[in-house]
Amino acid sequence: MLKFDEHSLMLLCLLIFWGEGFICYRVIKEKQTKINSIVSIVIGIILFVTFQIVKNVGDIRPLSESENLFLKIEMGIILIIFIYQVIFEVRWNNDHISDFSIEEGLDSLPVGIAVFATDNGMPILVNSIADRISMELFGNTLINGINFNLKYHEYIKGCEEELLKMDDHLYMMTEKKFFIDDTEYMELLFYDVKDVHDINEKINSDNKLLEQLNERLRTLNRRINDLSVETELINIKAKVHDDLGEALTITRKYLKEDDSLISKDKLFVLWMDRLDFMKSVSESKKNDEYEKLFAAASDVGVNIIVNGELPDKQPAKQICSMAIHECLTNTIRHAKGDKVFVETHFSEDNKYIIKISNNGYPPLGKINESGGLGNLRAIVEMAGANMDISTENGFLLTICIYF
Picture 1: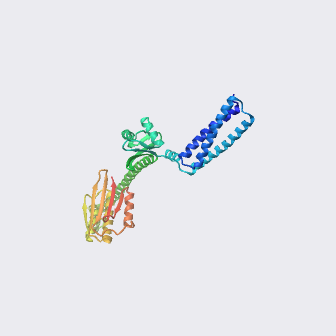
Picture 2: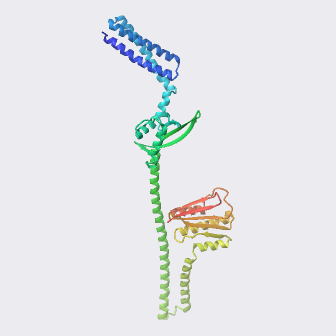
Picture 3: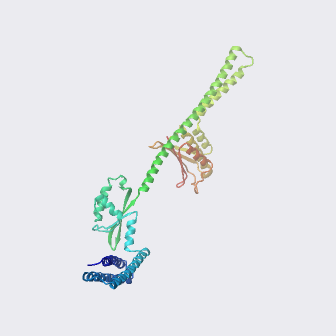
């Protein structure tokens, strides 16, 4: 019967024997030095012989103390050599790229990879992510690349934005064909775009919020401008009312009391002054900013050509007149032109577009928005509108006003 020590020796032989077999396989596959594989084979043979000796002798008679001591020393030496081999193998793997390290690296990538031949669909490379996607969707590993690709495209058509949602990931697939030794292969890559998708969703949400805030600001600016106009009208009406009241009071006093201090001439001058004021108010409504601009342009020999309707409501009217005035000034001073073209139209999304150009010399470089153009941009943006200047095909000023 085998004793406990003999059983322990046999078990240790088997464990080291299996370990040596795995190390030998790795050494040969990774093409390490021949001495390593020879050492593994020799130790494997010694272990096999030792195992047989312990088993066969132990079945016949108990091992003597000297034999037991010899076997223990032998196994101790082999165990030390085995530990050294394991340490060497670990260090070698850390310093060298092997088939195993490449496979582990591909599996640890955050991108799913599947490469297969386009003629028969035979996969030559499938990492863990691509294999897991196949298991989750179709219940089997990726065996045939052509069938997998067709099924995947059918499945993804029903997904939102054609992105595959799986666990906490959102995958986007790309395809690429390439050749190796005249054989065509297809490469499928599965990118996890969840972070990018979430950022885009947040940006879209923030843009909608900003658009709402801009709309509220534009509405507020329109109301402020309307209030300013109404305030100015009220002030004019109040002045007309006061002046007429004063003239009527003086006239009444003259007619009833025959005041010697009030002569007909003074009364006539008083009424003419009041009438002139009301006439000036009436003419100011007719001769607004546009007529003044056209008259000023004509005086300096520049023709303003308008295609479309000029806005007549504030703040669009003020912005448009200021823009035409600034472009008129720049046409004379810098472009040396004699025509200013103004094109206006309404867009479908309630935008009033104003485009102003000229027939003068194009700008030599980038325009520095200082002075008049800088002030114009400030007023445009304060009103909640947009302004853009292009110099690619000559000077072009574009203003977009929201209604």
